[in-house]
Length: 434
Image 1: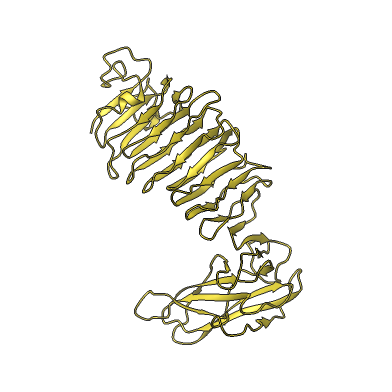
Image 2: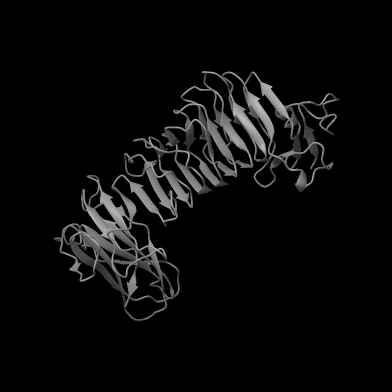
C-alpha cells in the first residue's frame, strides 16, 4: 500500500512521491493507484478544470483508496494533527464531477461542480457494489442550472457523509437518491441557495436516506425536505435527532403506496421529543394539547400521537403507527396489553385497532401476533370499548386491548392501525400490561 502526494503548486517530476514532486490534480493522483493506497492532498491545493472530472479508483469494498487533506508544512508522512479541510477541486462551465469506479474514503476536500447558468452535477459512486464516504468535506454545485443535482443513483451502492456540508446554486437543485445514503453529524449542513425540495425520489430504482444529527434548519418557509413522485420506487426517508426549521414542510404528500415513506424521530426546531410519520394513507404528528392524564411523556411534557388519515386510508391497507415497545416478564399465563385513544366518536374494530407482536414460541424467536381488529373481511365491524380515561380535548375516549400468552420474556411491540378514511384520532403511545 503506497502513499502519493497531490499539490497544485508542485513543479517537480509529478511522480507523487513527495510534495515537491507531487501530482498536480486529484485525477492524476488516482492514476496508477491500487486498492489500499493513500493520497495526501495539500491544504493549499486548488485545482480548477474546464472539463468534466471523473474520479475513479481501484479501491475495493474491504480495501478502499483514502484521500486526505493535510497541512503540507506538517510531518512527512502526515499524522492526525496535520489533517485539514481546505483543499479544493473544482470544475468550470458545464462540467460534472463524477466519482466513478471503486470505493473511496475522502477526508477534508471541497468539491465544486461547474459555474455559470449551465448544467453541472455531482455523481457519487458510479459502480455497483462500491461505496463512498466523505468526512469533513463539502459537496457544492457551482453552476446555476435548475436541474443540477447531487446524485446517488446507481443501484447497489452506499454513500455516507460525515460532518460534510452541501451547497447549491439554484432553488431547483438538491439530491436525487436511489441508493443507500447516510448523512450524519453535520452542523449548518446546507449552504448557498436552499433547494425548494432537498431530497427527490427516483423513478428508476428504490433508495434509502438516513440523516442522523444533521442541522437542516437553513431550509425554512416554502421549502420541503422530502419530495414525492407517483412512480417512485420504494424510497424511504428517516431523520433522527436532526435540527429543523419550524416553518419547513417535512414532506410532500406521498402519491402511491410504497413510493415514499417518511419518518422523523426526535427531529424538530425545539427540544420537544418530536415524532412525525407520513404515508399516502395519512400522517402522524406529536400532540401536546390533547393528551391523556397520566399518559405518555417525554420526561417533561405530556404528549400523544395525532393521526390524520386521508381518503386513501381504508381497512385493507391502513395507516400504521410506529411500534410502541414494553418489556414483558410474564410467560406461560395470559397478559392484556391496553392502549388508550380518543376521537370524534368511538372507533370500530375496522377503523382503529391494536396489533401486538410477542414471543409466543418457547423454542424460537419467531414473533406471534394478536389484534383486536375485526376478524375477517366478511364479519361486521363492532365498536371498540369506551374508556373513562381523562383527555385534554376531543370527544369520545376508547381503548384498544388484546390478550396474549408469551412463552419467552422479551419486548412486546404494539402497533396501532387506523383504517378510517379522512379521520383524526389521538393515541396515547403508552402500553399498559395487566
